[in-house]
Amino acid sequence: MSDLTKSQIDKLGDRLREGTESEDDLRLLDEFRTSFRNALEVVINKLHELESLKPVIRSAKSQQSIVAKLRRQPVRLSRIQDIAGCRVVVGGPVPQDQLLDILRMWFPGSVNKVFDRRIRPSNGYRAVHFVADIEGKAVEIQIRTLFQHSWAELSEKASDLVDAEIKYGKGPKVWMEILSDLSSLIASHEEQLIRHELLKNKRNDLLAARSAASRVEGQVDAVKEAERSLEEVMKLIEEGRRTLDAERIQIEARYNDAKTLLPGSPEVPK
Image (cartoon, rainbow, N blue to C red):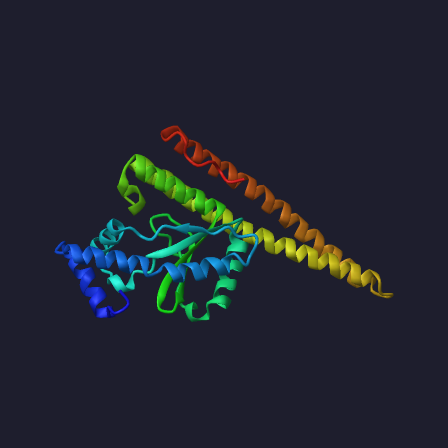
């Protein structure tokens, strides 16, 4: 496999797309798939440096999945970036962005290979995909929040048991509506979580400022100003908490709709 050029790999992809592949072509494709193994191991070992993470290794993209992608999309075999990869699930959007920053630092050559599907969802699917370039081998790292992961699991389960087209944004109308609604609700909820976190950080800064001013003689006005600002921020935090609770009730309702149609569907993340 190592002596195949990019042009030869793409010609192999053309034959797979056209359905004119030979037994030797399938063998070459299998070698191409396994050639990513060492690069994936480098990424996994690096992720294990962060004790809080538990990366889940994806099996190398199957021959059938590669062929299906070549026939479904105008992509060259050498340009497919998810032959090998792993998934990391984090608590929310803030740690999601923090991990992305760490990956950019670890793999500086991959700075421009970030696919933020929170901004441009794929048929309702939201996540951040980071593609690390390890000695010419692309390894995709999927970073999902708990809610994004639960949505993806629901979509996969419905695709497996109801209609395989669901994951591509097609299929029964009721499922399209459930998944679309859930995706929008989750996006709104996670945006609110970010605002809520920023407000809590501001509260902590104001508490520190008030404490510092109270220890300095003649800073009565500064203390009062910090207290006024703190009162305003606390009101916003409480309003945000109520909004988060209301959004969660809406999300739970949609998950319950899914469970009615498909018992065993993923639970709402805690």
